[in-house]
Length: 333
Image (tube, rainbow, N blue to C red):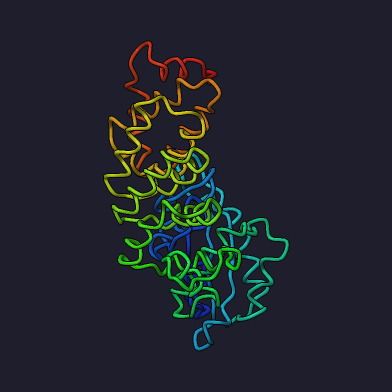
């Protein structure tokens, strides 16, 4: 059998069940075919974050219980085109082959992560989201406080107080929320206190809602409560529906501030796959002196679906526009 040239090959040969999750721009499942194509340098990473592909890989040996799975959290460096820089991955793979038997499992799978430059520890919120999505994918039950979170956000009369909940319970509920529950939640948005609403919005940034009533409720709360505006906008703009795109356009109509511009790039980038919106957004960030125009443009251009539109928008920027002035200020190579 030939020596594996990718982690995907290694998992196959070692008969390891591997489920990949994005752990960067969003926390969500990653298609195994996309991960393999990325490793084989046939495609750019679909959701880059600051020039890295951040992933969680849930591994367990075939025939072993899902609860014995281990988690690898790895950050792969990307080149200017958003593709894998293979050297660090190759070094990790060599380390795997040196230290592992034919069918590694359990603690043996954790050894390669020790002192590994690719490994990282996620923050509590993405870790809670990963746990919730992985348990659902593996057919495992949610955390013990799942029912309490469902009761609280659904407004059930016997619901526990918010203080009894945590990020994990909120993540579990959001991952398993159905359309009917989303509609009931929409009716609760206006009454939710700041802390539980903020926790909810932080989950919805990664679990975009397609429920129009919920998106409208978040829009109204954002306008009514300035202290929660940014949290609501992040959850709202993550949604793929037209109402979210319309809200982005409204923001651009009123010269958004630095935080709002950053939210559009971080959570609403998919709405910029639109010639006019993209041109308006680039002009808006170019007009804000304190905004890091170059870093934002570079970050957007690493998204495969935005790379060519961004390049074309920069090339066709009108003479005298803020975008053209920013480009003229860049050092010449």
